[in-house]
Image (cartoon, rainbow, N blue to C red; front, side, top):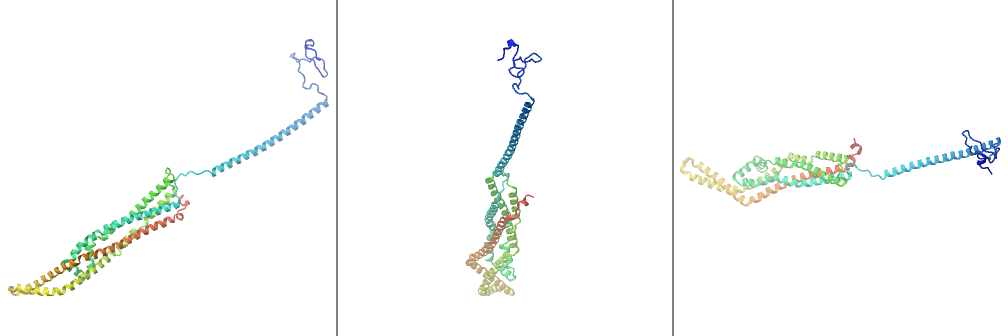
Length: 384
């Protein structure tokens, strides 16, 4: 048991060579602290053994630490790689599920095909209505001229004019002048514009249908480049289809009007021939009677009496013609006008069908063009 520092003046060493003595002091007079190796053998062998133990311990723990660092580093690397793979997979998964937002309204080719066909069908329907009205305007003056021509036909002057035209083989020219004056010009003026009307109606229907499609897709976006190229090209091609113009030119150049007037002339010539034949017997007695009356009336004139007789015969001839013509008109004028109307109706129907066929042909050409869209337009051509 150590003695109190009160008597000894400081702490007492418990073990070791200086056991029982006071601890030594430092240079500044303070008592030295207890050694960390107190009670340990500090001989040379003991120190060597201690150093070896400490070295082995350090090596052991150092190895443990190194292996631990390597293990943690490898795991961290794998963890980082796995994390990157997961992130990458998540990104790929997110991209595959990503729905691209369009910047333009592209209409499907199949829908464009339907739109073009519908626009052509509506344009042709509208044109058929326009055609009937236009054809009525072309033939209206012809129908109006029928009563005037009938009055001319049932007159002495008209009969002699028609008879002369038959003899001179110019009867068709006379009919053309009186019934069909300005006909070809009217035909071109009223029918040729139908080509332009068709194009205008087609483009109007096309724009309307495309606008409806844009509203369905996205009204805030413009029409796509590909769709716009297809529609523009289609519209340009439709303008080049001059089927109606060709039909009008062919009708005028073919001499269809000449053919019609020749048919009318033959019918009229036949009627004139019948009238001349039937009037021959009646006129014979009338002329003789006229000559006799004229000669008797001019008997006091002496040598001029025969001239009076001839004049009387001419008056009797013309008078007989006038009477017979009036009788003929009374019984046959209505039928004559009906015959003219029927012949003109037939001609109108023929021309009407010709133009309608041209419209149908134009519509089919556009439908064929629409059906060829998938082959005519390719993305690589439209993006140049």
